[in-house]
Length: 390
Ligand SMILES: [Zn+2]
Ligand SMILES: [Zn+2]
Figure 1: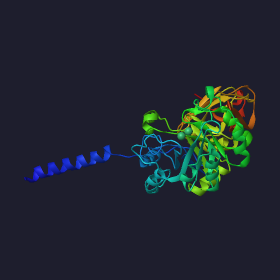
Figure 2 (figure 1 turned 90 degrees about the horizontal axis):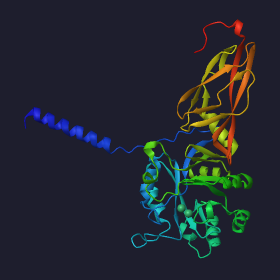
Figure 3 (figure 1 turned 90 degrees about the vertical axis):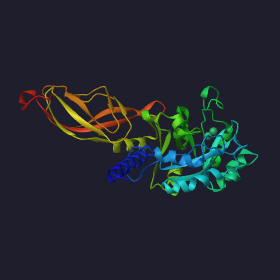
Figure 4 (figure 1 turned 120 degrees about the horizontal axis):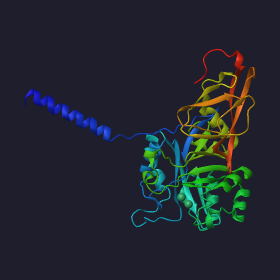
């Protein structure tokens, strides 16, 4: 072979190899929601299925999906009671976890053993996670199944209480059986969100009864058949505010109800946790401004999270006028134009501009109240110096 030809062939080979690497890229998208003081914001999905019940994927594929989609921890919760692939896949309630475990460990994800007790309503479907042996939940009587989970130290939550197949017209109903589970301490949380459904009534129940709010995908298909990832969609997930990303820390946080549900462009949960996430996400870059008479200035607000916060004015502020609605775009900065409302105001004032964050739900239809705090140096118009603000 001539030397030039060799070089050409060698270069072609290198290009092909590089192209192969590029086409085979396996990429993780980080979910950008900040940690809060004292806790790590752990991105979790505690409900998904594999071929070992009625799902359409092999367990280790669930692991790579979780990794690619920015999760830190997850539970596969195959149905105890039905297995649509039983002619092709043997029934083994622990098998999906066992297959997924080494892949999860190699990718640094926390995997939690779980199972879905799937009965008629009431009590409907319940997930038991942090179990040691899912097979023990395969019992005749549903109470024995829950008991078996509880005896293994499980965290138990009620799944999709507003699922149309079990709740006529999608209205969640709390039955005597749920009171029984609740009073025994056998039900620790409820899905406020399941896949593409949000249950406002359940949100209210969780606040009143001090139950943990969870939101999960309950995905059966490969996730990229359910979500338009190229358009920025993400699966429903539970943000767990835990001391670290370990299984033990996640369980402790779940029992202490430190969760927020991340669903579409919304956060759903308890006020104190939504406030903590909002406060850590937002930074007012120039929080000290001078307003001359009725002149205008711009406040620059940076949003470190990936959520577009939708704010609407929540009351008047003395001395300034502010926009009625603002959208603080995720991972971007926006300019908020404020204007003096009198000619002759003077002096330094600390002002909290009141807004409602419409897509941070602290209760059904109730947005988080938040203040954008700035310091304003008011200068009367006739004493103003310098050029007017553009
Ligand atoms: Zn279910
Ligand atoms: Zn399910």
